[in-house]
View 1 (cartoon, rainbow, N blue to C red):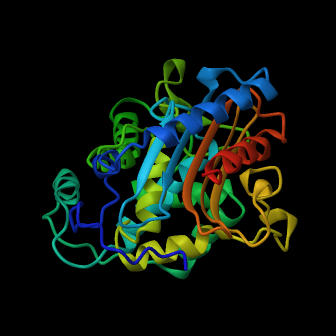
View 2: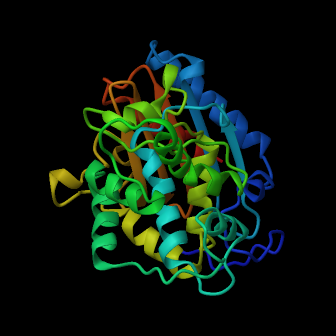
Length: 329
């Protein structure tokens, strides 16, 4: 079972996917030493992969009552490519499938900003939203992600804007940043993933010197996966739904659904189970995974790389180095 049915008594009972609580997970020095060795081995094997272009974050959940973690450059910012869709995924479930009851402080403030009285909105996951979530996670579809960003921020792409209209557009796109900043994350998730853009007002949003470009860290993605796996991202039911979307067979039935071959999953032994989301462009090549190994090890692993994206052997090779270190007692 992928579910960790243990209650982490050291943490609060509120299911939010809080980054501060992730940082409170004990750092294991031995695990950290292993990640440093993995990084050194990867840089020797791939000379173009410099130390500042690699980040690793690992959480060992094998003993769920006492999880430990470590990272290598885990708080360094990277362009996340399609990994940003993990933040979109969590935010969709927060917005459309959060438990009923008193709205959050942020939601109250947002409703006041929009001129309304704070109240719990009657929002539900529709079949079309669920279809977009599947396409966004299963095949990393950018159109599906753009549709969800529009829903979450009450914006739409289009021609250039001026004055207050542009200011309002940019402020609305900051909604996800505000949401995750309130949980301790230092990220930016304002931009839609584009295959050949952005254009129009989205180009204006990107800003001078790409100031509003999406960015995130290995630790931020490890934190999200940690709370999803622990069934504490939004709610147990929402976490289970997200896990179902992220689960991947090691032999994908359709090539269009491949996020295994040429990614971390390629390094896994037979009998392993994988939940993952990859992200790659001409600049970066990443993977964020939760794995259950035949040995019984349960691990959240995030690999962020920059500058070697054209080498499709990179992530499987780093995966092999990681598994060799992590499986070695």
